Amino acid sequence: MSSTTANEHLDDDAKELAALGYKQELHRRMSGFSNFAVSFSIISILAGCITSYAIALRSGGPSTIVLGWAIVGVFVTCVGLAMAEVCSRYPTAGGLYFWAGRLAKRNKRQWAWTVGWFNFLGEIAVTAAIDFGCATTWMAFANLVWGVDVTAVKTFAVFLVIILAHAALNAFGVTLVSLLCNVSAWWHLVGAAVIVVVLWALPNHHETVSWTLTGWHNETGWGYLPYVFLMGLLMAQYTYTGYDASAHVAEETKQAARLAPRGIVMSVVISVIGGFILLYTITASIPDSSEAGLSKLLNSATGLPPAQIFLDALNNPFMAKFLLFIVCVAQFLCGMASVTANSRMSYAFSRDNALPGSRIWSKVNPRTGTPTNSIWLCVGCSIVLTLPALFNTTAYLAVTSIAVIGLYIAYVTPVFLRRRNPDFKTGPFSLGKWSPLIGWIAVAWVIFICILFILPPVAPITADTFNYAPIAVVFVLLFSVVTWFIGGKTHFMQGRDEASHLTKAAETVLDD
Image (cartoon, rainbow, N blue to C red):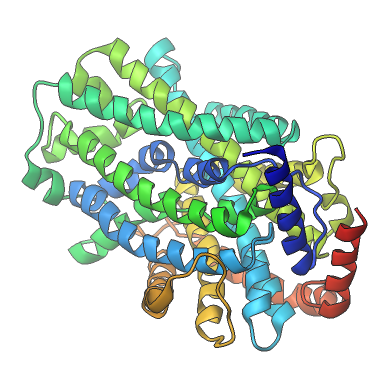
């Protein structure tokens, strides 16, 4: 592409952003592949699948791990397609909450306010869950290589190092972030392929297709098998999060109205396919498929069942460590991309005067073109949310539930409002006649999982096993309502004096 053509696209993107009410402040240097890479890295089949593998292994076993992944993948693809159609019309860093504000017929700003807070909660929770999962994997690697004992305190200390490193990398600028996200996408694709090839080539034994797809294991304490299976779907549903990142970096993406929605859809579709192959391979490589063998995996000294599978199946410590090293790097890159998306959403939300101290969090570093203050805000909140992991062994499960519910409420609300808005005009990406069917399937699925994942995952229900996700969701809902009437109703700028706001933004772009 010539420099003239590139500049024309940048001008068009800036004008389109101005038409939506905002001045171009972030540096627009991301390609379509980089946009895809951010979402694909956050979904991360080498992060979510690996760190939450034990959730599905305990709650249903192989059938939940493999078939559950495929079932959830079909419905998540519908959610991604429906979101992409709206993103194409409104390619802004605010993403979900901005869409809700534009699509609601009444109380526009309050819809945007509520969705924004659920999105903010979900982004914080998913960043915390990803980086804590990364720390868990790193500790498993340290256990294999150096014999380090895995403890809650050591894991949390590693988590702090990882998440602070992610903040520092993001603060350097979007050019470095874009490069690392591109590297991350290829690392995930090639790394997953290497793991699959090694696990098929080296082990002397593989489980049958029948067992790998339908094998059963239950250590939840519940006896109703369909309920156990459904609770195990949290592994897949948690992994399929973060693809809204393509929307949040839209203001840094060239030709955003076309390439940002494509980033959402392709990141989901490729993850569905790649994740199925990876999970099938890992599960088929389990050397001991007895109840005792599966229980041994759940109680592995590494703290990570897939790491134990690598060890047992390969009978080659060096190769097992190498495969786990691939996973460790992938998870680090995943967490870095999550901080990127999280900070952009927080920046946009602050730009519209939603967060306390918005003037601080909405500042853009003129040298790097990044919302540096917002980066550190997100990291700090994620650290606070992860603190219970020091004392409660089920804290990681609770954080994953909070991430799933918070994010998916934010995901589906603008999709629902789009279906209720007959005046919606599609952008370059349109589902055409399939839009109503796909949109309502997406809405129905999210309602279903939001009910499902506030239920108790294990029995008996104690202080250690209680699912704290419903408390967190109710808290955010009440918090958003109370703060709306206290200050948001007055200060939140989304949709307020829209005509004047758009005119001023457009004039600023033209003056520049």
